Image (cartoon, rainbow over all chains, first blue to last red; front, side, top):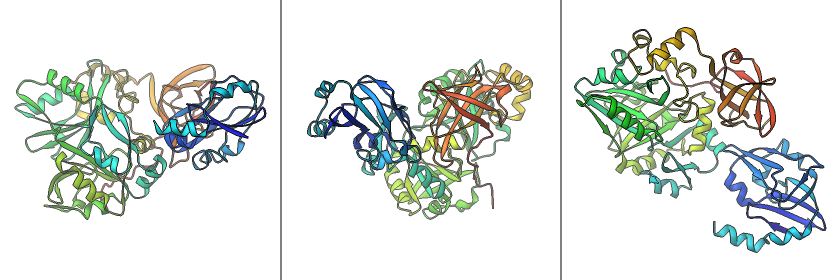
Length: 123
Length: 365
């Protein structure tokens, strides 16, 4: 399994053609207290850069962009009762949705952990 | 971009600085929900030095101010702030403000984002004999919450005790030797105080107040969620030149004598609206579920749009989303079931009476 990152502060863990998507610790710290997550339905087809998911904080609603194209296979329904998990455990238990990748070559445009850490350090 | 007198103080305390009203201001320190709940249960210190503090004086100042504000100054006793409205000739709201009678004139506190326009408007509409003094070397702090009194009482001295102040009363005090104009007022719905001090002494006073165990510094984010729960309007969002104070339910800002006599900007429309009612009203809504509706979201009854949200968000105290909206008067009664459109979805909402969280002003023992 390999983890990739986007410039919009999503992460994706990829194993073959299946991926798990969430937002990074940096993203949750910028958003502040998360009060609601609007999750996508399984079966939804998305293109890379679409916003199938919305994270609501006290301050504002923010789009979560899909790092890759594919079909949503599941969402983290546990966030319905506990959206604050995205604040407390953004890169594990606070995952948002699973996606079946339609084009693994899109991963080439994403950052690895070291590149992402360097990117955040510049912000 | 301007900086507040307490800019370095906010940064040193971990304040996350954002642009607001032309200033760098702290939106949060430890987190909006924690700061919000701390203010509701203990006491929070807010830096509101971006707001405009004006002193208006000169010959005929009383009549001149009554010509630009729908206020009755004949019933305004010294040192007690009163809410008023700066209106345009159509009765639209240019700003909302507080007016206090001092010995030789009137002390006004206006919104930060509008203060330069307000000063221009007042210059244009007040006679030459009346002087507008922008007190821009003063800082303004608000200490709000059920423990604000015990915390502040410990650090103030004065000719009379702090307990002499009840809601909407003010007086001159000293904090660690610093001259402080203090009124028992604020914008959170809680008991609390607003404190005007020289900008040069702001750090020392803020340090001293925050050294009290009841007090933490609170950012703009919680200030907004607190005032929303209190059902209080925010200028530029809930109030604008497109809204009249009558539809916003701010009749208390138009004093009784002025409702019959008129003689203020927009009086024709406002007196007519008081007599005949308005087509829409500003109401509170609670939403089902957890997704918030925000400013600009449309309000619907079936296929018909009946209103628009002007402020909304997740209420930390009620633990559900709340909103304020202008809706058609026929749909403005508490209990009315409506829908709010958010990102293509319809969220169920119900009109409720405001405030969402009861006011706890101190009106006397």
